[in-house]
Length: 210
Image (cartoon, rainbow, N blue to C red; front, top):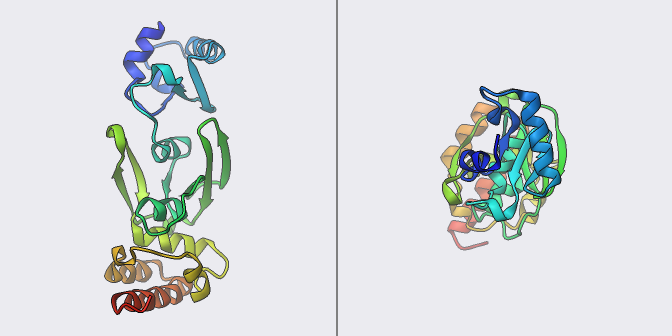
């Protein structure tokens, strides 16, 4: 494969895999060529079998959330990363946190660090395909599920003190009915306790007490 052919196939993608390129071609030869382009600085290896074009050759800027989905499947972006995406917490979050029904892990890449926290398959829902820049997309938890995932995965996450420490803002974006539906679906006592405190905060926000 020529590098010009690679560019035609991948310049509009946030990242790509070895198998994507090897369709109809010799896999071993494709891997060898990719290694050569990595050594020459034309490609950057993010993880085993996953690459991005070096900056001079990109037509789009890879979105971290789209990369997070590709680095580990199944997964969706959640917790602080999704809360920041929706403007629900004030902090910039440098690490992209996702949840997965697979093995938890932390991946250091040239694009930054990606954390994957494990939840049970029965809790693997409440996400949607979000539109990102450059026509990119990523599976991201809905606002209510992002908060509940964080609560579920944090010791003491259901406590009012923890929820206040998050310094939630734009809290009106949270839908009390959706929260109730999610908690009912989860059948989790911890999330039920947390939702009671979240709704209290929502009521205080609406009455101007926060």
